[in-house]
Length: 337
Image (tube, rainbow, N blue to C red; front, top):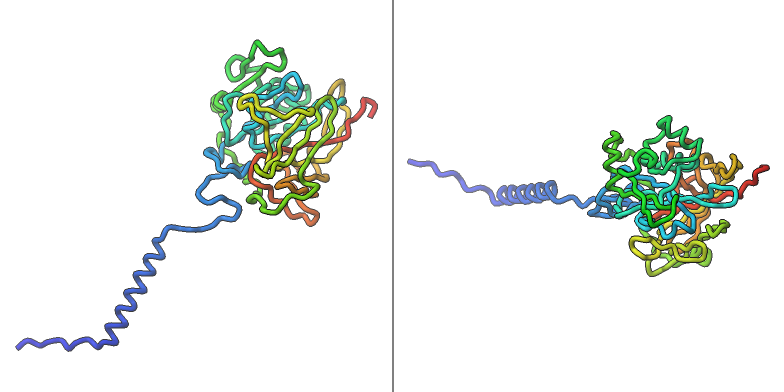
């Protein structure tokens, strides 16, 4: 005679079913797709360490390329594709020079390329860049020969990494490309990925512009005066130089910057047509972004430190995602100073 198991109590069955349902939900939660929101990082995109914009080469080591400011060299090729640009006077009469930094974009041509200046070198060091230049003033070349920064000099690589356009008068006819610079950097054994921490970034502000934040300008002489005018439709500043729009020769379009910063510092006469601009230490700064003007302080204690901007309480000012243009301004010294 077979024994038959007694039927399970209905309460026990209900309890077991509840446990199974909870278990199923728990497993599903464990294996669900993550939806973590990272502060100051656009979801679904890699971002450049300098611009904070979506970038296909987010940890590529930047190239910092020395560019001319002379009216004869305008319009410059590739200037609108830079992630960051530093600009400052380099002579007692106010001639300026630029250092355009490329990480995310690959313009088909960059130029006109000019010589290295000592005051730009710490700025390139602070963003872990490879410096690209065509020769340099005496002190800058001495520093570069001591290998304080990875660099690629056109005086050594003209005809390979760098080329000249004969229809343009010298010395404004030197050019290169990111592809050529990358090829030479690899040959020289330079590190290809950046070790720099991303700059503190934020999304574009939805606030309206203020009366003081729509125009940024520096009154440099010699047709070097610059002005940035806020375009609310693009949430960016159109660049003007010498009273004319700054045009990229490749795109034929006016150049825009998302963030404009004026760094206030001092300068001293060096010799002949050379001055020394202080780019280490501290000082005051002004930031224009989103149509607003922000008073700030700048700080860069060591050459390898990034240039940082803080408020009066020492809190770092987040910069909006996009191209940054840094104007380093100082009273021009006379030969007797």
